[in-house]
Length: 235
Image (tube, rainbow, N blue to C red; front, side, top):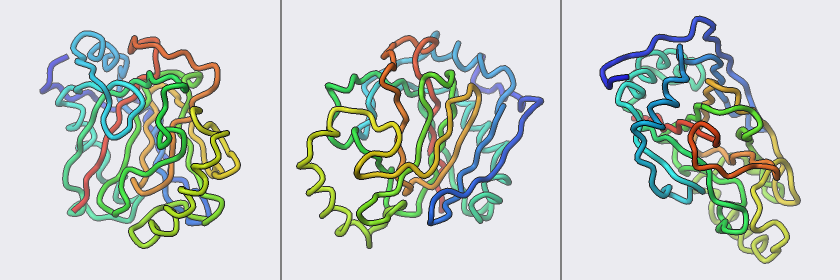
């Protein structure tokens, strides 16, 4: 594969827009995104330069081929506008990385044990493209039980932060990947990691990878939980 190659859409490409939670947040679900997506695995194996993840990502991340962002920006803008009530002028650019979860539960920092948001501003959309099988765990969305918050904003952070400080004193849920509802968060949506499925959602929506207790932490992109994680930046 070369960087100026643009892969075609999968012949069985399809999408739907779901609405999750009380706040009716849209989630775009694309199945069968790119034709011969297995080649993206090959690129990760042959050319990947994996390093420790950033922003509390519990694993390693790597560069992606340049054509991948071109694929996102060629095939998805009209669908993104439909799903999130945007115009083409709102879409600025995309940024992508390969991501491979490797951190065992015993080494998790507290923020990695609970759902999170990528921003508290309406500045970007998050995207997960699964290059693995459903047994590797998908992605779930959550409602914070004490506040009812599903999305976070600057106006909500004082209240949310006060509850987080109290809940952090209960260590029963530390050093675990959240995988469904617990005493502090209610799962409001779940998407399995079907190979070549892509999901997209506002980055201020509480979410987490759903990692099963039986998960095997494998550094091999072919055997592990390989995803392409992207942000679509908005003007």
